[in-house]
Image 1 (tube, one colour):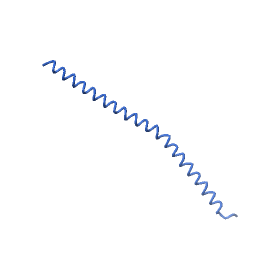
Image 2 (tube, helix red, strand yellow):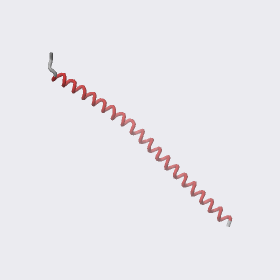
Image 3 (cartoon, rainbow, N blue to C red):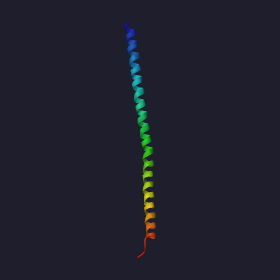
Image 4 (cartoon, rainbow, N blue to C red):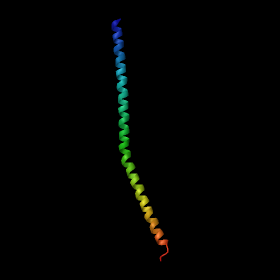
Length: 74
């Protein structure tokens, strides 16, 4: 009887250890995925922001040139 209790306790302990390891590995996998996603998004976002800035500067120069061409000369 005592041996059966020890076997059950060992099996239960192994079950909880395995479950804990699975949860820990799942969390580590999600953390790694988030870090990888952030490393990919960061340069893309920076490039997009630079592109929007360059486009707005170009548009501003075009509008300034157009208004200079349209404006009456004194």
